[in-house]
Length: 443
Image (cartoon, rainbow, N blue to C red; front, side, top):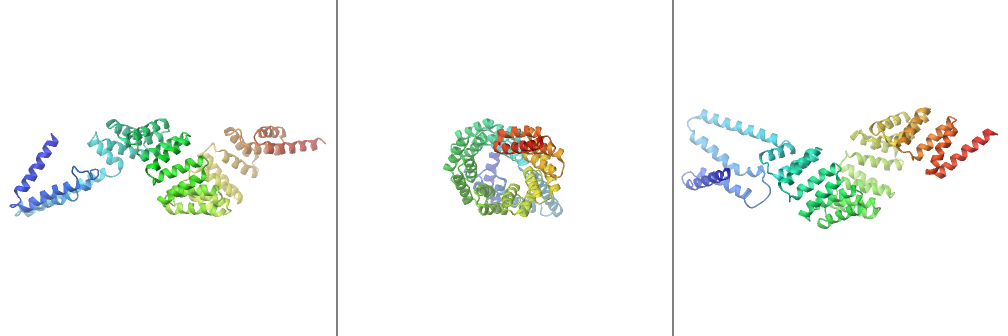
């Protein structure tokens, strides 16, 4: 009924504009302006999805018609004319204010869409995607599921539902949704890429590589597929191929931070230090607030002996992300080498506050405490490291060394016997030293 009434109104207005073409030319022009521009902006010929800005040009005719009507039919009532104009301006201003609240963010916009059109599968899909990006995973799943309930053959809906399920760690369900999307649209490159990511997280690297390559066969300039393929190739030990794909990603998008960073990591491992630093610096030029780049650059500068620069980048990483345990631990190691043991200890403690089961931090803190003469406290942290990782050779070595210091060589031998199964060469040397010491004491 609503559609029929709207159609009748449109027909009546067009008929009226034709009828008034000679008598009331301005009114006729204004009405025809609206409809002619609507035909250009939005008709049965699809240009793009409907947007509010499609009404900007047609509304010129409506504004002209409204102004003409007010100033021509209220000619001798100046106060009334002004009053009507003020009221209209206030109403339009309030309407713009209310509408701007709807456009405040993606959630308010798409919530408004589905509230006004509960059958809009695109609306639910977009709302689900926005919820996913904002971290509201459960709500994202509800909306993406509603999208494909309304239109089961909507590939974007299946793809986005797959992404939300992957975020929950439900990889099998995510893989199922990506495959559904690809069954509907076999040329859906984003679904191939996402399927590759899910398979990689399942440890199925060969299958992941296959999916990334499928995406690149369809879209050779798909940057994300090049980057993700590079990551999988690294895990397969195919370093040269990974480098090729990162360089391809940078050829397509020279401002891609992730490609610069990952290429820097590979080049660093290949001891191509200068090239690695170049790519890290490029990544920071593009995004100065990427804590991972600062962290990786600090590591390579430390190996190069540029200690102060390394500390600067570790501290910058911690400014950006104060709860970065690895950065706290590594800066602690550098500070110890500079003799700033107490400052290093504070970083080790911060590491363990954030990540209580960080074995390296327990060992490093233990060494620092022993160096300060706090033997018992140091031993506690070595024991904690072994509770977390019973086969850690460093923890056994340091705990055994403490037992030697305090004169409990029997306990030290016990630690070294365990170490013998992990590092027989080192354990042999340590046990020999203890035996020699015991023999001398016996003489």
